[in-house]
Image: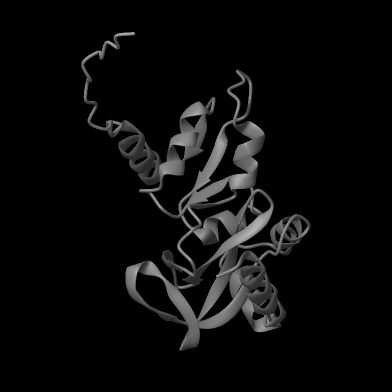
Length: 188
């Protein structure tokens, strides 16, 4: 899918949001202010019926209603993550390209600077939405981009996410097989 198609899909999902959807999020602790803060920076969220397909992906369809959160990278929508308000820790991707919500905030903290506030890491897209889209929510714990968190001064997370992050960043880095060549001498 093209980036423009993903953005158009996210915008269309936003237009489907009605008061009952907002009321449900309000009941789950998302404030109107949090939605407004996120909406001032990006498409906040939408709703749509989705069908889950293989490899953690989804497609629009006749399935249950989901909250659709656009995933940004460098200011562009690259993916949409679908999640249910009654099971926010179970999500699916539209394209599979989005490794985390809030990566644009990471770019502001990417250089280690002693005194930088800790990056807030949220467990679910719902938690991230509650925080007004500040901090990050890791969606793919196997993504190579997770390595970019190593350069931060500090990360604040709940106990479960902190343990998961520690485990992910403690994995040995893969090295390719390195084959040494014998020196070749050229006779002139």
